[in-house]
Image (cartoon, rainbow, N blue to C red; front, side, top):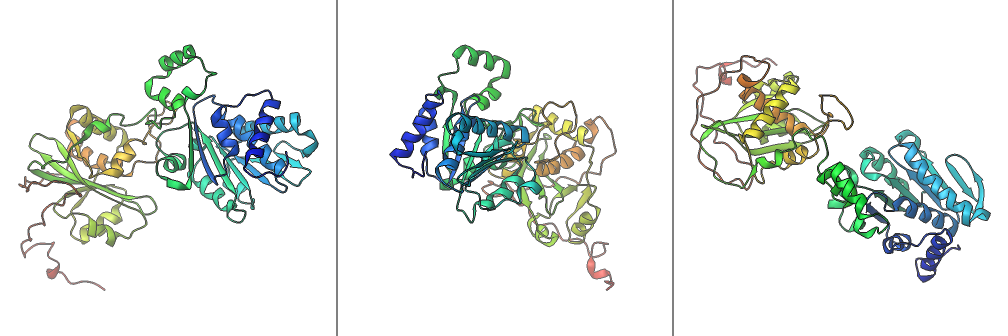
Length: 441
């Protein structure tokens, strides 16, 4: 294995090495081994041989190009060590003469190349630079902050990155790169139909045991909604854009700065159906920015922990009341509306709310009744709203705020979030008339 470009010679070297190791490569494995793309996403079913392929690629790169630094990271150190051990085994079997020194997490070669595996900790990874090949194993489960930490290590070397994984829901950098990464990435998908070593009898049994959604994710490379979703049937709430019925306008707000400031609003009709028709979702913006994007003729319910934010919105003429932050009864109230068909989301108006509904989940393999506290900002805004609208039917009864009288509203077709009509001017003799007050400077 000499210093070879990505040509027929390199192809023959990779093919010969696999056969020397007693393996006959699948076509997709040769595609990975001979690709010259800088960024590769390897989306493989379980037991396809992705770790074997990338371990061999690490050895070929380290032996074939002097001074190559290969870095292997994963969500847990044990996972990175498994891929590292596979690479070490290959090197011992077909390239022992190239090995200078071996530790539990480093292979040092006589040509000054290195293969290193590291735990998934930002502080231990940041010390490495000038990496020629970055391998991220089980990338769908690796935190986004780790991905952001390792990417700059390839800047000086103009090195390569290979992310290999079985899908794990529609979240994280691996999913977003696969769905939205464009030409920056080469995508190689290996469903079970390309792995003849797995029998149909095994697959039939796995389908019965796992269920259809999880089976598609594990064996057909499909990015499915996660198991344990808090609102698994939320998608049924989406309806085509249509004219809104007359009713009263209500909204919910979840405050945030680094986390998103999220607001959703809509009409509660005479049949007690809530039609969501607008959304505001933004990070790192001052309250003055949000004030400009919140409709005024809406009765808002906000996170009760945001007392300062509520006061500031009230000062700017937006009627905000404290919502109910009892999480479990609130989730139950949202679910009840979904099951009863009393929650509608007009298509195209609340994209972030719908995206969160596909991610907000309970911790896998846990009996906790509390969901994971992420991907829930617009959903929390909706929970504050529905908790107040439906307080009479919640397990923890509490006197709610008075509901304003109904207001007839014009119909609208929501190509963009629907804005309620401007509020009626208040009478001059009112505590809300700022002209009657003397500002204290």
